[in-house]
Amino acid sequence: MAIRKPAAPSERSAIMAEMLQGAMQDSKFKNGGIIEGVVSAIKGDDVFVDIGYKSEGTLSLSEFQEPQEVKVGDKVSVMLVQLENDKTGMVELSKRRADEKIRWEKILERYTEGSVVTGTVKSAVRGGLLVKIDDVEAFLPGSQVEVTPVKDLEPYVGQTFDFKVIKISNERRNLIVSRRELIEGTLAEKKSELLATLQKGEIRKGRVKNITDFGAFIDLDGLDGLLHITDMSWGRVKHPAEVLKVGQEIDVMVLDIDRERERVSLGLKQTTENPWNTIQDQFPVGSRVTGKVVNLAAYGAFVEIAPGIEGLVHISEFSWTKRVARASDMLNLGDEVQVVVLSVDVENQKIALGIRQTQVNPWDTVLDRFPVGSKVKGKVRNFTAYGAFVELEEGIDGMIHVSDMSWTRKINHPSECLQKGQEVEAVVLDVNPKEQRISLGLKQAQTDPWSEIAAKYPVGSTVKGKVSKIASFGAFIELEDGVDGLVHISQISDQRVEKVKDALEVGQEVEARVVKVDRGERRIGLSIRAMGMTEDEIRNLEAEAAGTTPEPLSAKSEGSDNLGGLSAAFDNAFANVEWQPGESN
Image 1 (tube, rainbow, N blue to C red):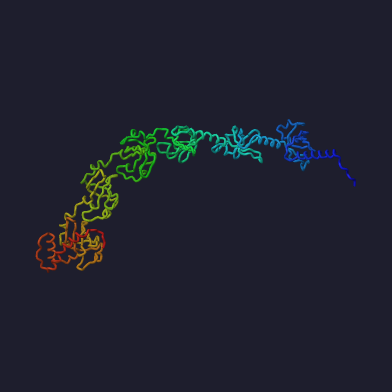
Image 2: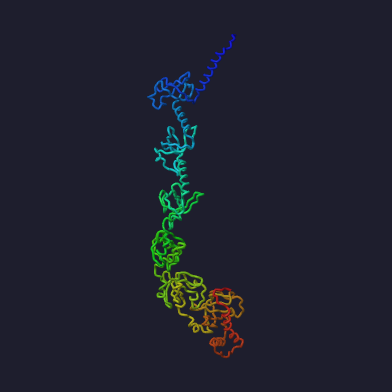
């Protein structure tokens, strides 16, 4: 084997230089790198470029912006896509990709995140807009177009604006820009300046930016202020939309400023004179005005009698005679009504109004229509525990007390002798127009049967009747004409009776003798036990009732003693026991 001689120093230097040049050559030709080359040939749609490699590279003629002007010898910057294509063995180049990379590197040199750029909106795409900035397309998200959300992006196409670069993506080689941040920055400066110069009580122009249930936000050219619903009008406002519209320009007064929290309270009604300052001159007490019903409550109706001026008609002031339970029973929203001013409270901004005062009060002439002593007719409208109300005319009632319902019976409840809806005749007993009361008597319209009771039921006479009520002290016997007599418990039987109900029952027919007639107290004493009296005992009882001296009795003194104590027994019974028909034992 031949032995190679060591190379001379000069030869070694040449070898090292050649190796270094080869290494540099290899580092130059890397996929994705940008290389300067010269067009060596054009064949059809293929362009051959000499890049100084052992073989030429190729790319498509369509990658040139003006393919017809490309010629051999032109210098061109290309990107090495693939050094040796597996199919053709050729070097694969791309001018388009080289242009994009060069353009992007220039963008990176020119712009950074946060820088301000100028661009033209090219088109609307899903989620936002495409903006042309120099030779690069940037994306403007829809949320970054304006400070407030934008529904329609088409009107922005073709317009030129300043934008702020908010993100640079090297991987996607795109810019994300924002117009909103620039606007907010400008507004923040305006806001700061406005807060520094704003003063309470001054009038400012503003634009309605947003409307809520409780008020509206007003743009004061860089600062939003709140106009509360209560400060929109001197009158009633149900919803701010009744007064304002979004975009409307208005004059407002600055009511309060919180510079620390950057909050401003505004007033619209304060820009006009408070109508309550002259209310007493405009609507003196007693004046009659026409107004519109603007609100209904259970207790009354609010009537607007002038812009910003409302008064309350309480339900008690609706009618002189009708009983009004709810305001809505008589009025509807929007109704025009005539009212009379009853009182004015300027300090609390309240006006009391009346509707009934616009009409004649029927109670002023009630004595002319229903004089005391006259007979009247009406229908029973309602009961109370102490009497019945009778409607004499619409809204005018008279009251029959239970004590004025019957000459002969004690009435505990009006339902015992009357029914609702029943037509009755009564006598006017008393009229009080001031208290709006009329007292009626039912029994006074009838003949008092007690004027003939003594003659009809003489002491000692025998009567028949039915047990109508049972009490602990005796039983009430219903006679003719609705007259009741009382059989004391001691006069039910010769035998001792412990309980009345053990001897008698309601509805039972009985015979008894009249032993006591008291016209003053309207009471008749009866005795079932006395049915066994002799004629002498009866005469003695009659003489006692008449106040004369009885004739001597032929009967035994024992019988006379019994008769003599009979009337006294009833006196004691009537004096010590309150008649309560219906009280059962």
